[in-house]
Length: 334
Image (tube, rainbow, N blue to C red):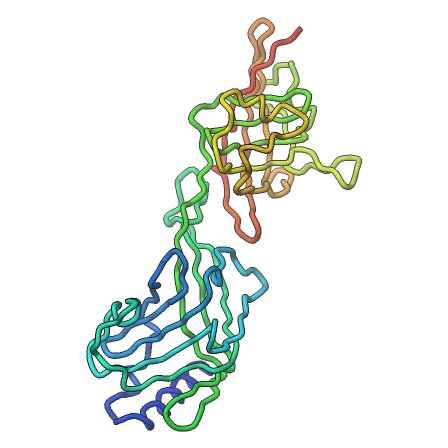
């Protein structure tokens, strides 16, 4: 209620200072979607009505594609790098009037409000593919940035106005979703480094410091796989086993991937672009690793399944498929 009262005051003061053509209703932007002049940089975000605009100018990368969690992203409005405007025009306004380096000569701006000081607060949440895929995995498809001005001082026709809260509203950015899937179900095992992994040309899902009890050359009883948890505590309080990582690389992995994964010092190329980390498992609930072993003669097949796992990067999270098949490892008994 407080924010709408502030908006009403904003409207009444604005109406009292112009030529009488504006009304309270015409400055209500709450149902107007925000867009950007350049979706790559998002340095100028705006809302348009037939003869009005709201403009928010910020430096590049001010919006973070990262949930704010408990912390609100806050910037100082200084009318230099962080700027906010309300403009009214004497004719129909279009994107060209806002975004073009040389805007059209018409319509003219017949009134402008400019924020001189205050705080710009941004609360960001991830948006997921909806409806969610049937196998239980989730995909981050973008981020919603809710933008509010706090205690903003406006320069306008007549006396300045301090507005305790003005809600600019939501601005949505899109991202390419992270989807973990592999071209085959053939996993690889580094028995010395204790890693099991599967990969495509430029990404890999890896379990490091693998629990030694999981890959054993002994058949498992039907319906009774060996089980362990992601980030399983060990006798050393500083060390956990079954550390799950999904890594996206800046280039292609070598054709023979054991030359990259199954050595003590990871090569410097390709470099890692993004790393998602597995969330610690909970017994019978989440983050469960299962291995089912079958054999023929001395050849053992170990099917590795990850159940109800969540991966995180910063404050962003996504889930793997409820029953995610990492792949089958082959070992040969001596």
